Length: 430
Image (cartoon, rainbow, N blue to C red; front, side, top):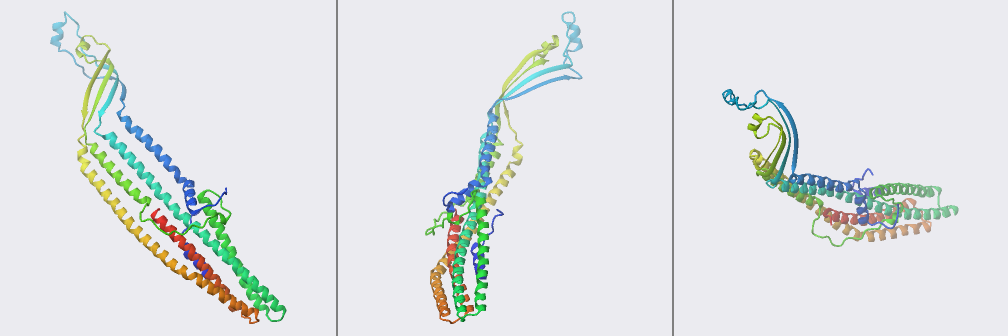
């Protein structure tokens, strides 16, 4: 009976996650429910909001910028007329000169007219970063498909094991009843009945083990999809896939494209940082001294003043880092291209291996039915010997076990074939 466990382990060959009932559930439906139930799905909304706020802040660069300031100062010296000039005009006017204590309350307004494309470049960079973040989530959610596949087909295989186990129990029960009758007639011995009883108890133990494992898998799948599954009949057996599309829709490829677009947007930002910026400005203040310093020398007083104009700013310091920044981005682009090439190489290896497994299993299944038929015929022949008084319980038990293993192997191959077909479908994300 160890073969049963080996078949199950080989057919599952996967690791399992540490973790309201209505209608039937297909494999595709379970995958969709798992995606919708997974907490990571909320990240899409959070990313949208974050980028929305960031874009709003970037676009505010074209709004008028206000700066309100106030200051009071005392300086060691202030503008004044020469003493000779003061003495010359002393009989006409008293020239006090500029006072050393000065006060100002000012409002400055700046309005960008052209920023060298910086706002547009930053907006494009934020949108590209948003795309990268969302594609990263797509990749993480994609792994859920494999987890659902493993649990779903594991449950189906265990269900087949349970079904075969029940059939074996039924056969053993029937043959034990025959031996009991033969013992009453003095033909069979108690040791023969005990041998059958031990085998029956062993098979029942296996049934309990299969049932516990199936319940555990169903619990894990329930947690994954967010809906309780208590009835195995709700899980529909997937149809065999006849044709596979040649196209590849893996989310990793979309991620690599998004990362390359982000690199392009970053390059645009670097280049826009080299451009001059043109804007309007206006400054108005109330205080002393004003712009008319000559008047303030003769008549010190607070006054209203303003200044308007147009200005250009050009930070040529960006030229120092431009070359290295672009080289760094170019290196990052090469790294992404290399990752994509490696991913496609490994993906081709995986799909090739899965295609070969599908071919292998189809060949095995082609012979399974005949093997099961022959094992059944051999077991019936052995039972007929028992009915005719030729008692060889050990041989009978072996024939029952052989038939059970053949039937289970056939069922396992069929489930494995479906599993590999849907793994190939998942691998190419079709």
